[in-house]
Image (cartoon, rainbow, N blue to C red):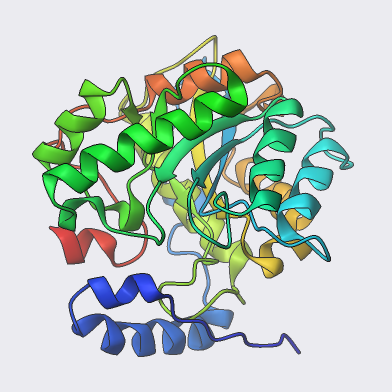
Length: 309
């Protein structure tokens, strides 16, 4: 029996009160969907071209690092990416909260940022305020200052400014995207997302396998329509986790296997190395998949598309 952990972040206080109601719905859906079957069956999906380029999973992690020394989920995930039976030496993008007190704002959090970079991963920007603040709700002055602060924090670790940003709560508009671009940041969203965030009050997934399969089936449809770009001979498929989550940390190697199994079940060819293992290639792929037009129609994880659109 899986243990259920209920968490509500201070960040949700900055969102409409309806989110309290949605958190309860999210919990019920997470519990009731454990026996759900995938929406798509491979036989009903549009056929892929015979010479279809392979996909390559681009792993990303939000909200970290976790500034704890004992049983650190961030360190556990770093260890599993480096050493796992599927593909040792996987590199990922970590979208950081550089000044949150329980993340990069703590001395240990800053040390973890250095560990991530030293291990060959890409450091991206998420927040540089004391909390998980929605960029759209910050005043122009505070928002610009937070970008300057976050860029400076990451530059202090890597020696160069970050090129990637992921907006908190997947929330953005023309103003925030324009400001990202003015600061040299490319906005990266996602194709697949694990049900491991804290916003809905649930940090686990009883249907992680069927959920990943369903989401990848939707990506397969996009590929069949020629909607996703190829980079360096493969099509990057962005996957989102949270390295603040101990559930994810405990199941990281299982998640890697689920991704590989899902591609095989959907008859989607993968690259010889199904995950990125080079920082430059990883960053290049992420930039190619970035969104530069705030009016572009995109599919956000879970209920976020319905909320913001």
